[in-house]
Length: 250
Image (tube, rainbow, N blue to C red; front, side, top):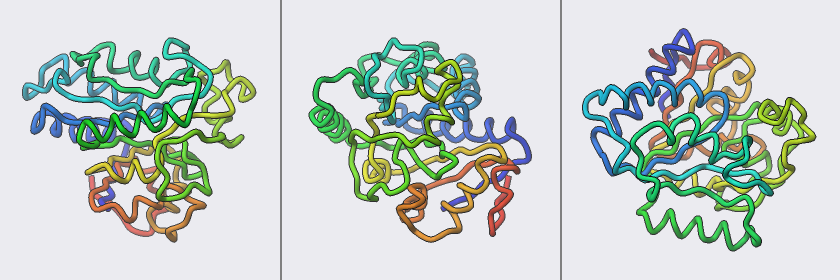
């Protein structure tokens, strides 16, 4: 586990975009897992700028994209959907081949079948090369809430009240408007990626980051499962790293 700490969100954002951009240059056919959330807004903006500049000939055209999760009960065009977020902040702007973009269907009739389909799609693509992650204040990754099995695969989950509160911004600020369920890659699915890049900015994430990095391996902190991963990097700003027992570089 590599911990890289930068003084500011701006510096951390540029560093994260550099890591993803380098991976795309080195492997244009990169299979990339994308998260949503406010942390990602800054990073995807930096990636858009790199792509527009064709920096080091960076392109998304041959990349394969997998969305990390989706709310249950809404379609891809809904303003709060994960797919809409990715299109607004990245995929609708860069030169991605839409045929290579995969997302979970929040309006599916049978969540079990939909999640099995998604697992097969990931497998058929050859797995995810680089999975981008955020972390919830309760330590969740994807929508894997505390108590999630480390071997879990893509599935339907019930969202905690704290997660619904944290995501209420896209729902008129009202947690009651946030869907109670979501489809998400499981922890086992996430950890099957060849590399993971977790981004966390701000004081509110400090306790969760410390628990994931320095705490015990426990289902109470889903992100602690990354301690078992052979290739994971945490990119943090100084506030998010404030409670770590060990330092980083940046």
